[in-house]
Length: 141
Image 1: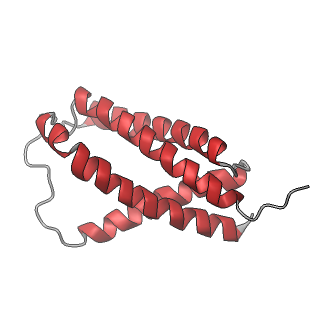
Image 2: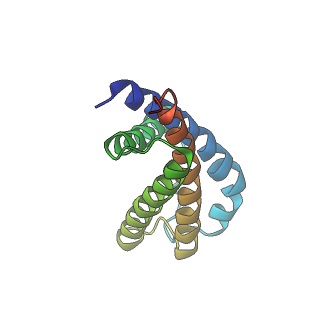
């Protein structure tokens, strides 16, 4: 396994996931998600202790997941990264959101659909950039 590509792709992916998450969830979808909650009440975390730390850890984990899969499947271009990232984002978000909807009252069907769309787009963008970065320095035959 190419550790350099894994580390580079994972860090770049984590940073992009964090930035796009702030843009998409923290700005563009903030009011939409608040207007379409599940039936659970007061689920927002009131205390901000370590919240930022866990956001960083979670986004880095997603970046490294994408980079690991890309290294294993030889994804090293913008186009392949876009497609593979989008598919992974869709499958992961559908899986997590459907299980969350089935077992909790935290998310509504409308919010679930919006989250799947947002996560798919976000992962496709991150995948495109990570794929491009991981293909840099590639020797041509």
